[in-house]
Image 1: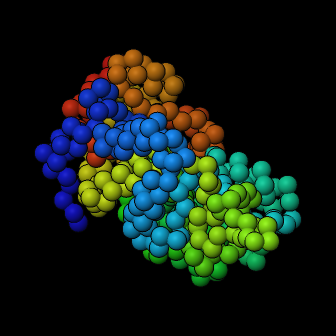
Image 2: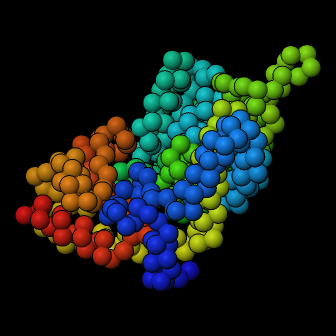
Image 3: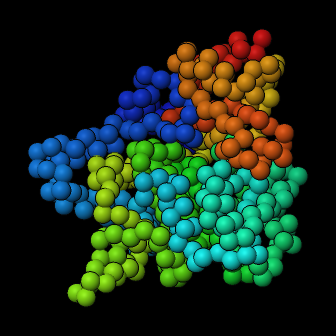
Length: 398
């Protein structure tokens, strides 16, 4: 078990993070605070575009694009040709789903109760027109998706298992590797939405047993908004035919015929922000330098402390489920809606998130929740920031 980051190391990281000096940030699950070095990498490329021209500057950034791909592969324990650089978690996940062969009536998609609403919208938009169904896998007594219940649901009509690893509406962590063992044993394609996991938890695609995994740059990874990572298992790639291609993902051959790339970059486009990719490369480098195990230990320590102190406040209900938990801490304040709590705290310079039913409709509905307030922490979060948040919530709760 790694030791949490030392106070001096955290201070140094905060000194290199401009936003840490101007806001008390508890919305890292929405978008975290980028480092000055990440911002400098973006700015440096924009200056190259201004001086050389965007197309000419783009040619100079190829090295950084490939650096981002290589670093992402290291982060995921994957091969570089299994990584696509996308514009976000949902674009990557949705592109992979849309690339599956056409759906047929009677086919089934099994999802955890905590599936992200955007993924559900994508699945329903495409699959249900063909008469395919989307079914929620039951959860166990702790709230996590139940692998035994999944196994009992399987038949020859199940064509996809999809899992949101860390739900957007709380700290629960689903047993992604256990689900992967079942998917592999039955040879059923397995997609993981790792938007909240990437940069917060160790991600080993071999251990997870997934065919596709999508992540975001802007959350725990502290990369720029408008970036994402898509892993596609090499042996699974031939089963995916992108719904959209261009001269990068499928260049024309001498006969004028498109030749689809034989790597995950078939999900990339020639029209990409090279500046943001430079920033993403730096964010990946920083996460690997700090070490994901150290990041996980620090976030877990902070989140456990915050949950325990929130639970002691009168009128505050901590809503997190599961046995292993993430840096997302969900709660409600009696008599107040979550949006009002968020706005009141924002007026005091404290940022949190608030989620409604559309974010995780199956889970929110099954638990009778219409909204949650969410304070998500980072390894940058300090005790002083937690004290400020608790003092503000204490005032609201009375």
